[in-house]
Amino acid sequence: MNKTNTWLITVFAVVLICVCLIAYLNSQKKPSLLRPKPSIENLEYKAFLIRPKPSIEDLEYKALDKLRGNAEFAANRDYADYEKFGSIIFCNTSFNSRIESANYAKQMELYISGKEADLSDLDTAIKDYENERSKCRDFNP
Image (tube, rainbow, N blue to C red; front, side, top):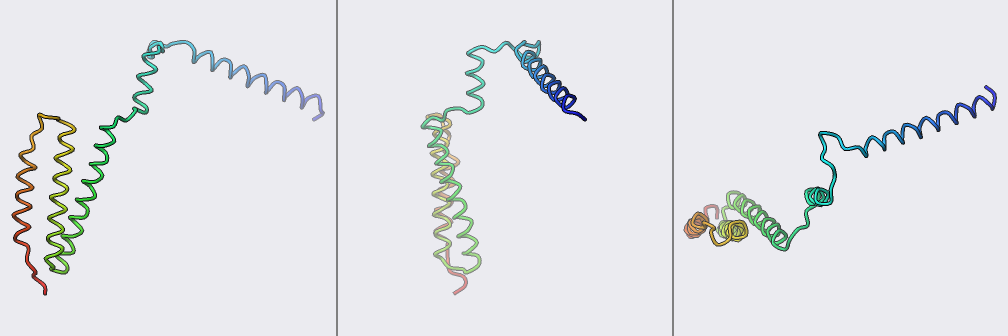
């Protein structure tokens, strides 16, 4: 091919791409029947749904949830060590971690429900853990 044909094809391709781009951008401006016309309130609502601004309570709740998860993990790990080695130390630490986890769960429930929180289940669970902790014995000396 000669240089003239190459330049004509290149210019035609660039013009075609520009026309397609302009047509696409114009079609995006027109509101459709399925999409509501964008407004300031609607845009703020969409921005809130995409990335809500966390409040102090949300951050504290997440921190309590992380602490509760860590306490449950420690309780399960220590109980597995108690079953493996049979030492009273692992049994006591396991139940201490379960009590700590229940306390974090109580605090989380207070964040969710406020003063109307029903903490009786968690209180009985803590009493049960304390009673079970008193039954810890060495079984593999």
